[in-house]
Image (cartoon, rainbow, N blue to C red; front, side):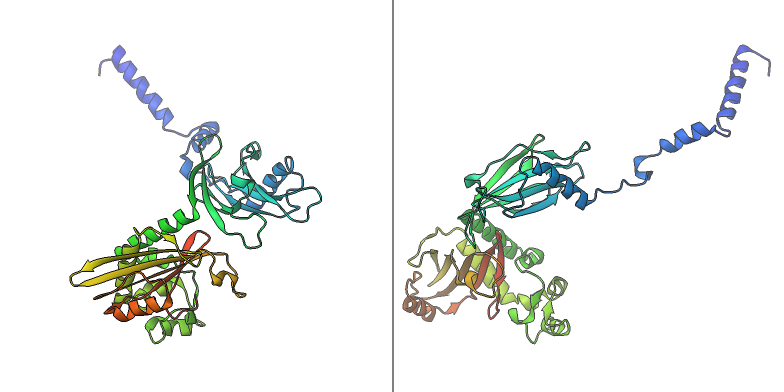
Length: 361
């Protein structure tokens, strides 16, 4: 090939390429290693929850030196989506010589690269809250009816979320609204036969004697499992917990009562009764809510039971749906061609818990 300026440039470029494809200097190799994708780099060690808590408590003591004196509780979780857990502390407040808290305040401490950040003081209704949980980047609080009560009942549920600057309240539900919302969600779950959502209203493991499954495959497995039923067993044998008729009855009852309007009953609770014609028969349904259930005062009870919910119904000719006395209730049942299986639920920590018939809860 004749030697020209073009061929000389081509030869020069080829020789440079050959040099670049050879051994790299040590510093170039190191630079290449440092430039590897982030996914290939060793994962950063997650922050130690104990250290996060200690740093958060130290930050809070700068504002409230003795925040633990009248009792405190805390929740830990990522509130601002940065992948590092934050801390919320609820602590008792009272006079300097108080032996018990008269108020309960809360503080949020965000984890930051330069150290914990104590957010400005946030007040809530009556300055008394109880921590519920941190979940899915949100903070859940409960406002009790009486702050100093030995067994306070929640009257309001609050939800806070990070807005880029602070934790802001994004939702507030009264206890009644929470109960109705949860009943509606459960009605939807039964309507679509959603096994997982239905099993969410149980607290596992279940004692065998608390559910009517004796003689079934689930009952036999529970006997071999120290008389307890775990969730995986209930999922495998869902039909033993909810035979077709029970599943159908509960779906019908929940669908009927979800839109009923409650009114006070003579016993201090609430009641709603509905009826509609089905051919020549009357189908009736009833929703009763007791906001001060006896079960909450049971000496063996270890939980705060907010309410007991009973749902019943039936169908028959010449049935009087509304029944205010025991005699009227018995007359209604006798007049019914069929009485549906009664549902009993409890509201505990803002969530429904089901008690199946013949069960101890």
